[in-house]
Length: 182
Image 1: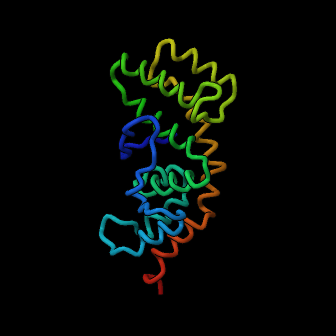
Image 2: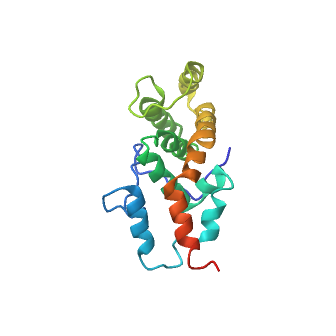
């Protein structure tokens, strides 16, 4: 399972989308992204080569700063961003060094994503939920590993292919390749 070295840790476990990063000004996501693309380009913005690499694998998409933000916005528009949010929180969790802080964060993650009827409950089986409950007795970096693998697999097989077929991705790809292609 890939790791994200370039991902900035969330300010809190709720991980709302950074609306400024995806050009949020209200309206639907496609309109907001088109508005963002109509602004003057600079070297920090998207290029066709980077965006076309996103279609190679979910790992490539998630390793891109812009890819992560746009995929997150897409999932949010479908009301299904909890899996990505959980996966990112787990990546951050693995970096914790203090056992006290790790134990405290594990409890928060469990309450928010794992326990039955959690506010951001992810789709995992009962057995995995119980393994996590057992792992949390002595929290470690691998506490949520099995659930993270399941969630990554769900994104890879379901959300990611839908993203690649979405108007959002297609519009972005077309808008970056349009005038440059001959």
